[in-house]
Image (tube, rainbow, N blue to C red; front, top):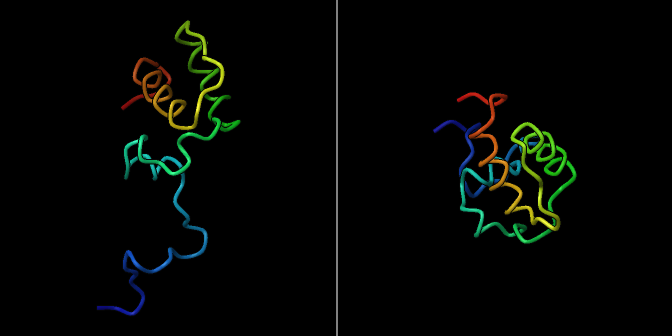
Length: 83
């Protein structure tokens, strides 16, 4: 095995920290450590855009997990996001 490879027990190289979207691909929202925290500004901004295009409203007080699920739902109905 090459010395430059990483294993799951080693930290990721600098600049490659997992993102929220990477986290969502690995674990269900219910298992996120920060899923109950308030939705982030970028999540809410993107949700506003998707909701406006879908003729929907964004509920107040969303958690990060709920915002992520709603983003997935609205992306599935959006012409903006293609598979």
